[in-house]
Length: 339
Image (tube, rainbow, N blue to C red; front, side, top):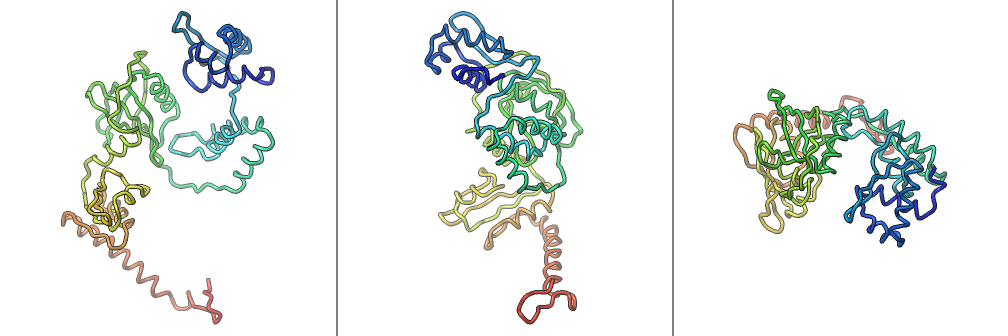
């Protein structure tokens, strides 16, 4: 269908797919044509099956709405490859997405130009996935509903289970954005019943329902949704806590993957402190193992037996490796190791 569209109309369709709504004047300015030309092109797009909705009056505008059939999408080369790569690796904490991703990728590859199909095929041939154990997964329909509510600034209600799954209740919130951290999805929203900003684990969220009530977005008390999530997680209470003094400057330590910036404090230009928390001593020990040599740790004495037990496990493993079984790891005369 898109082959029959002139270049100007293709640009118009691309603009409509980029943003939720445009005024006629904005479209005319972008394309360098008159409002009359925009109206004529919009009319032809509708004839071709693209559901372009419009409102009249001085503030009238146009938007590409959902229709009964999905019209072709316009993607440039980089966008097409990006979508194909994302579909190839679609395993990020979303339940049942792999099969849908395979179907979508098959359709996309049918229409990719040969030069792009070769790039995508090369990536597929050279890449394998490691089947790690899956953690809690979000429902794709829930994600879609929440994403639409974030886009439209529409109040939603949903059922939410607490951390212990003991308390389940109906919540009402103004959604701001979705954040994916590792294999978990979070909704950042203003909880209207509690009059406060909250984060909600999407895998604990069910039955989201748009209310039809749109609101003016509230200013988020952070630079962005990712920074807000990191700050809330850093401030969350935990059963165990330690403070480590690390021989690194604060900027370098904050830039490390997995480090929550709000838990880092500068001591001097060569030293920082890092707060570590966990509900399980083993998780705390795993965090300690990522620290730099020369780090020192301060915390409650009740943690000592737990960490000592795990330390003994590491010592036993080290001693076993240092004393191989007879004949199991002998060196050959040329200096290589028999395997």
